[in-house]
Image 1 (cartoon, rainbow, N blue to C red):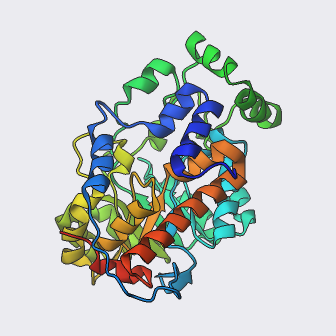
Image 2 (tube, one colour; image 1 turned 90 degrees about the horizontal axis):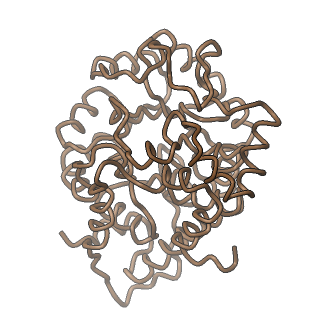
Length: 379
């Protein structure tokens, strides 16, 4: 880890450790991957205006979020693949979040149950994919609330599964499709096979989605055969209103890119939105969050909390999202690369790298606080 200087170093290490199919599932986009390319281009094109001769010796990365100050303006985003990146990957990420003093968001499609993740001591959020059977969805919410999670993150940008052709070819889509090519891929990565796959098989058999009802909890090698737990493609604002009535904690809507949708979210009484294009992994023609965030901030910035994610590889990337109006940044791929590289220590390293880069960026911009970044973005 001492030789790891940036997130790209962690990415290269993750690529060596993981089977190609697993790595591409994490790393790549959808269709022609133009949305993924635009993410990087949007960060590269964005400029920040520095101010000089400002004493920044007492600068701080502390950020207020939902009434609490946290040491970093970061949240570890929900990712379905974490339990296959390292054995117990969700728990390791949660422990890394706890060590950094930031929230960890558990995925509906986590390999590890929230009851086990809760033992990490992290502040847990829960990401919800609404199933077609609302009664089963409501039962899941009761289960999550019973584990002490107070923040619900409703993902709304995945009405159907996106087309990821590379995963169809390499067999590491959802579901995982056993094939000779996939078997050779695993054989070429024996450390992953021994420490992750075989350990899963020894301790509980093929991994499964731990939050699905027991009667519908198929292995990751099986498609979702039960209509009741398929992703709902009929989700509407009335469902958000119903959720607002049922869930007593905070509600965050993730996947908003339109200022009009941001206004609808504010009217629906949600507490926050995540301006996100799902890391370039869903709609290939979607704009980058950095392109639309200022307009969304102008539309609703004083009515709800704005968060953002997608494509952050540098602390300066996070600084640009914060400068454009976000109050915190969700991190997806970067902690996963760290997790693949060296488990919990690697995830902690990823957070430390991004925190250090953000700190240096703030000092060079003449910013004492995260809030000071708001005045640095060049339109």
